[in-house]
Length: 194
Image 1 (cartoon, rainbow, N blue to C red):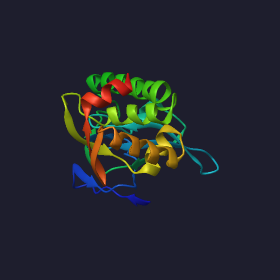
Image 2 (image 1 turned 90 degrees about the vertical axis):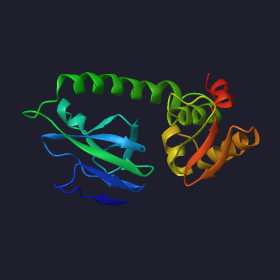
Image 3 (image 1 turned 120 degrees about the vertical axis):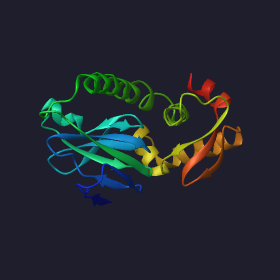
Image 4 (image 1 turned 30 degrees about the vertical axis):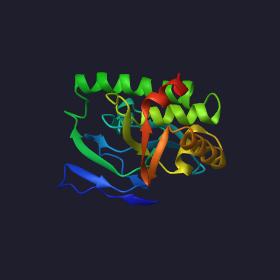
């Protein structure tokens, strides 16, 4: 993993997968325009634990505004585009604060209720549904992190993710899997995530 230093002259950046995003400065936060980022809590021993996902439309760096003493790490798990936003007088605007609270609650609920409970197939199915845009009707190219990242997020062995992906391909749910993308048949996937 390589650390990314964001230059002051840019307001939007494209990052590769597996890069650590530098924490925003005191008066700024970031908006994820595209891609997927995982937030890890890093303990005093330097060990990291997955906390939540950041998906397009979500904000990064807002944890600092809660005066949290936790050490957080932002790691890209697919190529990403990030946009810098600025706080006013080191405070989040009211509309952003409302969005952040709703997003944080939803992402934490997703981890507890869907990504860490059930079989490997149920967990992976829910993760893939999170990677799909809501307006998708039948088929869509979606984000697909590496097997290692997906296993880390849903807390199962990488071998279980590989077997589940093979099963989804066999059931015509997943096709044309490439690096960081796959084509999903939404009509087949939604009943599996119910």
